Structures are given as C-alpha cells and as structure tokens.
Length: 200
Image (cartoon, rainbow, N blue to C red):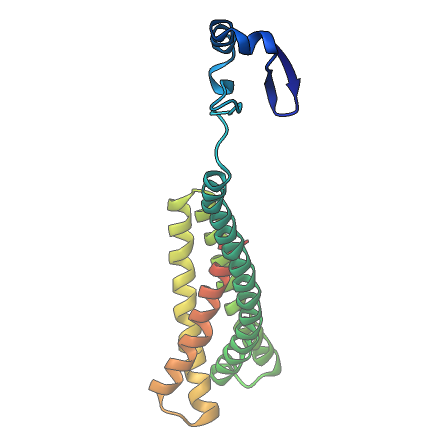
C-alpha cells in the first residue's frame, strides 16, 4: 500500500497486494496520523470542527460585534444631540442672565453694558467648568474633577437664580414655573455637555 497527498491531506491508495494481505494493510494504516486514519476506507480529519459547530461558535462573536457597533452608533448620535442642546441652552441662558443683571444695574449705559456682559459670561463659565471636570474625570483625576464640579455647581446655582428671575419678569409666570424652566435650561446644559464629552 502507498500514500498520496491531495488537497485535504494524505489519502490511502489501496493496491492489490495490500488488499491481498490484511496484515500489511493494517500495519500501513497504523502509520497514518490519528486524525487521518480512515473509517470504512474513507480518511477523516478528526481535528477539524464540523461546519455547524464552527457556525455556532461564530454567532456569539458576530452578536458581540453587532452590539458594539450599535453602542458606538448610539453614543455618536447622543453626542450630536447633546451638542445641539448645549448650543441652544447656552444661547438662552446668556440672554436670560444678561437681562437679569441689567435689571439690578445702575441706569448708566456703561454699567448696563458691563452688567449684560457679566450675565453672558455666567453660562459660558458653567459650560467650561463642566467640560474640564468631565475631561478630568475621564482622565482618572477624580479629586480634581470633584473640585471643578463643585465650583461649576456654585456658578450653575447663580445662573439658575438669574434665569428664574428673568423668565418670571419676561413671561409673568410664577417663580415655581420659571424655576422649572431655568433648571431645564442650565442643568440640561451641564448634563448634555457631560454626555457629549463622555461619548467622544
């Protein structure tokens, strides 16, 4: 009996002499690798996984890749919407803070301009502090992020008070309703800024 190589591995070529001598045939088969010893005359690779088993093992990997892609897409979309909300809320908060500051400023033009400029600066400070605190937390500087977050909360409280007053004066609403809208504007600003930073 002789051996021949094909694409799938060594194949057994049975010769008349080998068939006539069963002992020689058995001795020749014993020299083949364990995974290529024939069953009923057919070489079988026992190390190869069945196609169904390979497909079953590939399914969890495909599901994991799909979940990761879905999470990445959701994070990207959340960052886009959060950025849009930040732009709107900063614009609204700047106007409301400026209006509230001018209500208590002297009547001189310079004082009114400076008071309005300070009002515009308040939500910008909140935005910057929120951004830096989020980046510090993301970088593993939790203590620094906590300090910056506390400072940002102080400025945020000032902005909420100014926005509440300005909304109540402009719309004639009660201070409770004005406060709810002010919280939605300023606190939503901070939350969306943190979301946009974390999702990057």
